[in-house]
Amino acid sequence: MTTVVDIRRLRVDLDERTVLHDVDLRVDEGEVVCLLGANGSGKSTLVRAAVGLVPAAAGEISLFGRSLRTFRDFSRLGYVPQRANAASGVPATVREVVTSGRLARRRVFRPLTRADRAAVDDAIALVGLRDRAGDPVSSLSGGQQQRTLIARAAAAEPDMLVLDEPNAGVDQRSQEAFARALRTFVASGRTLLLVLHDMGPLASLVDRGVVLDNGRVVHDGALATAPATVAPGGVPDHHDDEHETGMFG
Amino acid sequence: MSLLDYDFMQRALIAALLTGLAAPAVGTYLVQRRLALMGDGIGHVALTGVAVGLLTGWAPVWTSVVVAVAGALAIETVRAHGRASADVALAMLFYGGIAGGVLLTGLAGSTAATLNTYLFGSITTVSAADLWVVAILAVVVVVLAVGLAPQLFAVCQDEEFAKVNGLPVRLYSALIAVMAAVTVTVAMRTVGLLLVSALMVVPVATAQQLTRGFRTTFTLALILGVVPSLSGVVFSYYVNVAPGAGIVVLALAGFVVAWPLGTVVRRWRQRRRPPAPADDPRVTGVHVPTEVHPHQHDEQCGHPAVEHDDHTDYLHDGHLHAAHGRHYDEH
Image 1 (tube, one colour):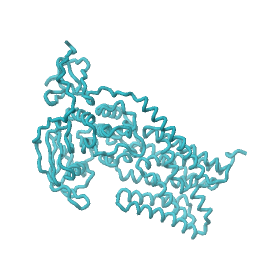
Image 2 (cartoon, chains in turn blue, yellow):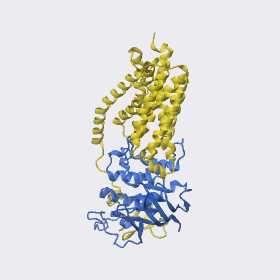
Image 3 (cartoon, chains in turn red, purple):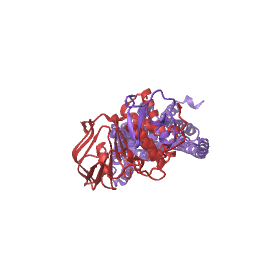
Image 4 (tube, chains in turn green, purple):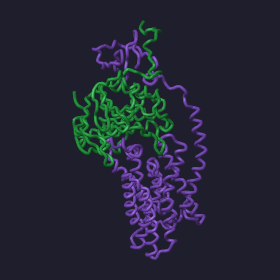
């Protein structure tokens, strides 16, 4: 099994304040790892450092066996930022935003290839937004916008997805929708690194939890709490339905 | 005698066409980035560049390109560092640009009337040499704005995401700033330095009243930039008024028409939207049997197996299939 994320003795300073102290984090291929912790514990900073958005003051970060400084295989990494407003000053359709996820695989002054279009279609279908593909992102709900950003990351066909608080301020239905999308993603043997405040419907996916407190890792391993709990009115379960017609019966 | 028989009118109309294309092309990215006033700032700074030209006797087109690019890069650097004092720093840069321009023009012994032709445009002053410079710069700006559209869109839409995707974000940001500076110089003789920002912003604002996507907004903004630019220059031929004023008033009139029209169009689209979303099991969790399935999923079938709570799903062509009685469900 190969190591996808390998972070050793990482220290990060923001505005001259140390927010991560000597943090180690390993994520293996195919694992679903969830970073947990209170607000300000440093969990978002840790993933932002891992994808290169925040500079490391000390320590070593490698992705897919390469140091982050020389890492160039950007299409293997899909990043979903936290609460990013998917809308900007000019309207953009869901399809246009998702298409920008292909850029790590595209070269300048080249049109979209058939493979690009197919990957974009698949990513939009994965998050269940096919009927909204031509609509402006700004007309979608917060949850649908978050799903658009997940599709954008998935469009690169990455080997690892990094999601920063995908559940924050998102309706239950959208949380379930991308829990399903992510389960499909993980099913193909790919890796998931999540920052979560509250696991919600994603709990059943998570293999391992890393808990941060005040910039230090205080727990790394299976999560003690039973992960299968689902909020009331949660995932509709159709496995109890008694009406069984049987397609081949 | 028709207005096209005059050489100066031919040159003014070509300059207006190029300006009408380049300004909204760059403006779309500036508006997307919420930097609508950047063009304004560059215009102020470029005035000092014009004055340097008047003082030294060098062509003002070139001196203003150099000064405007330097100013644009300074603005971009301050923006990218996002310091709290950036706001005030930019304001001082703009004041310095105007004051420096007026001061140097005075030293050069030029009159306020000369300065006015740069501030609000002037159809009779586009020389043949100027036109070549303007044409080359405008074509470069439009080609870059269209050719690099996927990259520039991504950088303006979400800078951090673009960075994680390996795009040289600072380079593209600097490129947008330089393109804006070049456009200001291109537009100097047509709409003028004080009103160029309007031609970058107003067509985009008008277009997005009616559009839903980036590409359609971009295309419509170019059309909405060209029409007022040409009309404004023609208007200026018949009525002795600086072309910049006519162009901007026409562009704003377009916005005033498009605004209520956009409201009607949006309402109409809302009513036409299909009410119920498709029953994608991954979204709704409803019971969807798969189509007739050719084989039984098991450990040997070659489809990856996934444990899901109390049962096993099989990954099949991007879908998860779960055994349910005698058929498979889409999961």
